[in-house]
Image 1 (spheres, rainbow, N blue to C red):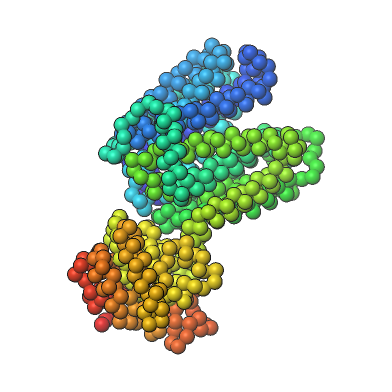
Image 2 (image 1 turned 90 degrees about the vertical axis):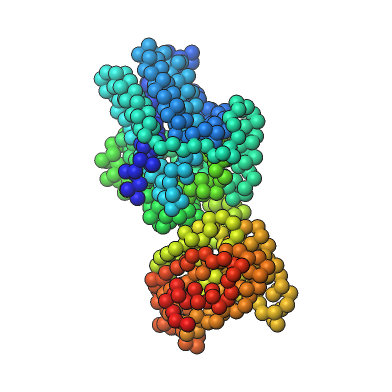
Length: 623
């Protein structure tokens, strides 16, 4: 993973976005402090709270106004060249900010903040849309993990630096130098990003904001999985904004801490997200693992609820510094809760971003990301309104509000998983392959990346289909014995996975015929179908003779056939041994197993005997 950061196809992009995020937050936080402590006297109004809210709105507004245009522009041109233009724009904006700072033109600085928000709105879609062009599919999760980690660490460092600089003598001088140095360094890093040409299918760019906005949301909604993923990502930003905006008042009113405690809370949350992002790459095994998303949402709920009960009932009248705060019984508990909220937030958000990039069409990818940015901005505005409703109108305390957020997170998660059960299915697969088994794969890249294909595999255990589904990057339609398919509870998961039930023609001619019709329909639609031609689990560990059903499939639809073999499953917990299954003391937990795929065969010239020989050869078994 570290090697990825040192390579030109990713390293320059990482540092470009990290430097930009640091610069944004250096300027925003410094400006907020300058406006709060005296700058408002130079504005047409005197209310510092109003000033802060106006500033926050000016930064978010461009995401609503320009994201559609930004997505369309990013889809229509070389993304590396566009990034360089955007970073040049940042240098000009920072130069304007320096002039406004020295002239004491705080109203102009608010205009600069709007321009910075505009620059970020144009950078967001291209930043994520370029990743699938620069990285291999197996590196996409790692790339997103680095981007999320770098973004939150840069936000943290920029925010802290903004506070430190404002407190220095010659603050304007150091702030000016910092803004310009970060902008120039970001541009120099951007010049090293490799070319990323537009897709030939992408339409030419036209400046039609209203039409582009409608098109952007049409694209975002046309794929239900992508749309619900957009909603889930936006909910994370709703939740994150709900926590981050309350840290200052939470530290002062509920914890009795000063500004050093506020910084500690911010550090805990940001470091947690960075750790979670890195942990996500480790747990996902180099693929887009949606099973981690439910784990992330459960952690967000549990530790959000614990945070709601962590603060003391009474606080001292005098604010404590960080040392005195950590000496309190609740001090470390709050920091640990926030860190773990960040960790599970990282597990939640990284797979969702990788999902958007991997499943969106190449010529529409930036516009999907742009739709995500608009929804994120809307959800953050909604988060502010919810905060006003619960804290000001309903007069809840901040810790009670955190409890409401945790309960809302559970409700939203249940809704998303009910609407998109694929997340729950992937969770079951992930838990299986990381608890009972240690799974290694070989040759799976030989499964065609697109178009129909028939996978043919030996049958060793009751969980063969789940293990194969967890290893294959493409969705797989499994042909399954009807008696297994109809098992209570599991039947719901099998339907979600679009499993095809089958039985012998003698047992139920209708089911038998419908199964082959479904198989042919799935292959005709360009899907991957997997069949276990033995027709039953092995009872001695050896491969049984292949039945002619596979030949019937290929006669009707001669698609590429990929022979596959499962190795190491015999004797494991879900396999038969001797005359029975699940014999006490005979199952082995955490077994080492291997999934091996051979070169695709021409379905028009392949029969059951040849496939059986191929699978035996992959498994190392003699005929």
